[in-house]
Amino acid sequence: MDGGKIGKAATYAKTVEQKSARELQLNQQGHLQKQQQLDQLLQFKQEYEDRLGSMGQHGIAARQLQDYRLFLSKLNQAISQQLQDVQKAEENLEEAREQWKEEAKRTSAFDHLVEQHRRLQIEAQNKAEQKTADEETLARQLHS
Image (cartoon, rainbow, N blue to C red; front, side):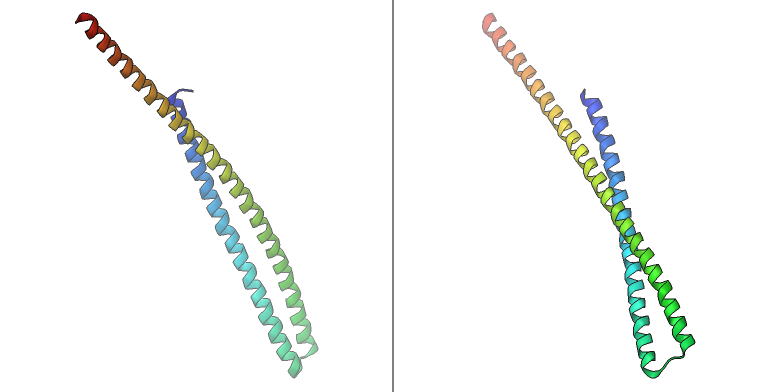
């Protein structure tokens, strides 16, 4: 693979890695948002249960108690759904993290190839210059 192709491939790999990094960031934000929503639901449930406990100490009508329990049941369902959403977001986050790691490795490998190719070009140029200098020195010695 020549230097131009290596450079283009390295540039493409870097672009793919950057896209993968953006995806990772979006997944991190999504996961954080889902976790915060779950935390809010759990906090709301705790407050609601505390309020129900306080009301229960002073007496509560059967109908009102039934309404509270129904609401808690729906709240528990919402929490369960949110927990599933958080778990799915965690899976997506881990997939995005692994994808980014792979792309970063690929970019690093191409960067290494570009650097190696550059070093080889410099070595070849130095050898050519040394050969030219040696030939000129030899030619001067022969003509002297």
